[in-house]
Image (cartoon, rainbow, N blue to C red; front, side, top):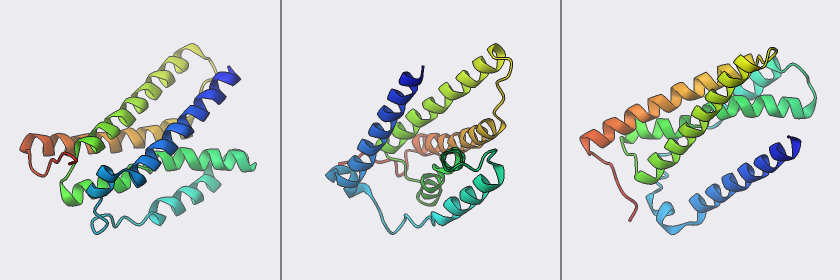
Length: 160
């Protein structure tokens, strides 16, 4: 089981790195980026997550603190994209598809939590469940604006 978990983490980190590289280097994606509209201040996510990680971790070992921080940060990572969407009303197909895949990933996590809750007698992870609930609510908010943009067909753009 440990090797599976390690392999999946390496695959996840590799895929995430490839996505970041693609977003930063691919000509089509770079052309759709509007720096003037992307004004979200990331410290409004990073600092509260770091402080909350210090307050909610059950062990102050460095890896445990980093894990707690990552759980909290993952829950709020969609906020910059959501703020940009609310400001511009623009959801391109690449972004919509990417967030749909992230939402699917979260749905699979929820299915896993539900299964483990009913099959493992001592499975309780309040922090993970709370952060996952917040993240799911933010994805639902994103999908609401995405569907609204798609229905009105305003500013829904395809990368050229």
